[in-house]
Amino acid sequence: MTDTAASPGGPLVTGAEIARLAGVTRAAVSNWRRRYDDFPTPAGGAANSPLFALMEVQAWLDKQRKGQEMSPEVELWQALRAAYGDQMVAGLAVVAAELAGQPAPDLPDDVAPRVRGLARTESPVDLVNGLTERFMDSARRAGSDQVTAERVVRAVCHFAPVLPSGAAVFDPACGIGVLLLSVASEAGTRCYGQEVDGDSARFAQLRADLLGRPEVRIVAGDSLRADGWPELKADLVVCDPPASVTEWGREELLLDSRWELGTPSKAEGELAWLQHAYAHTEPGGQVLMVMPASAAYRKAGRRIRAELVRRDILRQVVALPPGTATSHALPVHLWCLQRPENTGSVDTNRTVRMVDLTGNNPDDSLEPRPGQVADVPLIELLDDTVDLTPGSHLRFRHRDYPGEYTALREELEERVRRLVALLPELAAGGGPGSLDGATTSVADLTRAGLVAYEGSEPVSASEQLDTDYLQGFLRSSVNTRRSTSASGSYRLDVRGSRIPRMSIDEQRRYGSSFRALSEFEEGMRKVDELSRQLAEVARDGLSTGALAPEE
Image (cartoon, rainbow, N blue to C red; front, side):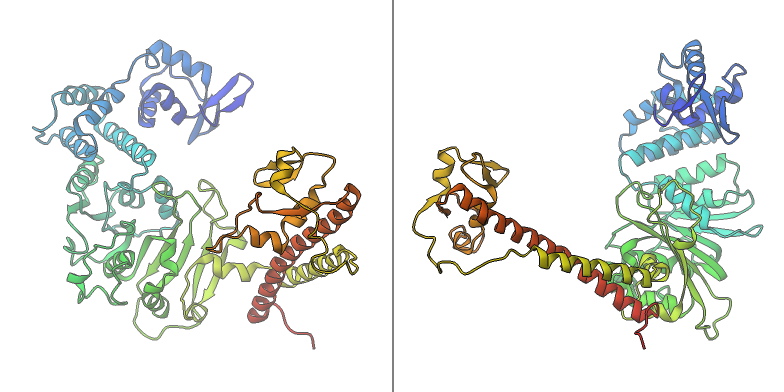
């Protein structure tokens, strides 16, 4: 069990945790709550997310024997897995056809009686929703992109506009219809979809039919190469397009009229899907497109991004939290477009809203905090790169440049002052070569047990040898040359490295200076990093007007 809450009467569990405990779907648990009067009553939580006492749930499951034997839902799922393997969507489509009363002669013998048995105790809607949920969980765990991730669906629904009655919604890469039916959840909303995988398109249509949505129409086919809805103009187009696909048909579609913002390159398939979606909007219609973060700055897409901005089509870019797309680890954005009501001159004072949620947990609220949102004028976006990454536009707007500059400058001054104090006082010695006489190799010191190794670093293993003295001489230019191969690579060679013989007091005197030099070098590295930060803050502050030269 995970994420269980505590109460005076013992731990509390959610409906999802009960489902995992019993080996069923969350939909099955919801059915139990409605069907059985003796199902435990909520012991906490809220109306839409109740919590139940774990001990009461376990007792109820034992009484019903649902915790001791495989549930019918699980048996059906395993029978489908055995029959269809990786082609699970085909199996779901056959089951949905059976539940919808359509002929399903290809229903496997091991699956048919289980479907019909469950259909006698569960409604077709609950059963098909439970199978859909189980399939989505399975796809998420496998890292599959067959279905849009639950968190992506949640984000699109959050940022979607309020739709008028009878509005038309279109998804040109709808998969099994999860995103389309979630965004257009209101009955009466006209839904149109297209999906290249025939089994997915069939299942999406059958599921919509079982849900009582006669206004949903989904066709099979490749949207880019063979548009199934060429005359459709929608109020809203949503799309989670195939990621990183280069074979999207560029060569055969070079002169296609949909590329009104520019012909996408072979590597910019997402921008082809974006323009396909935009071509299906009516004046005032909107597009919500899931895009890889790299599409916001890749050089190949600069011209199309510039046209989106210049024509006042791009209205908002949302950088979603890491982990939103569960099928991969890549960050994703949500691009929000709107077709202008008229094609007259664009108001250059218009802005694009930039929202950066990358510092949030993916399950947190999607409502941005004040420091996570900024309205950026169009003119600021139309530079050489046309970078649409929200973070790059928010950082300088919400940074305290005067405070950062003052703090960094004071820290730099303090570090430089300490650096000077670190330098050892050194006097003239006996001249180059004066210590070359009596020397010994590190190999001899190791064999004598005076040297040990911490990783690759030699250290003293005896009170007769000072570690700082040893390492200081080993880092000298003479020993560095001895440890450098003919190819120019450096590798410490204990057989060739030599150090002068000195008394322990002399070793400590030299070791103290070597140690001070090591600390000086480390301090210089930090000063170098700090100097770069200071220069960046000063330059950005001056160029944005947050800082100004003193008069």
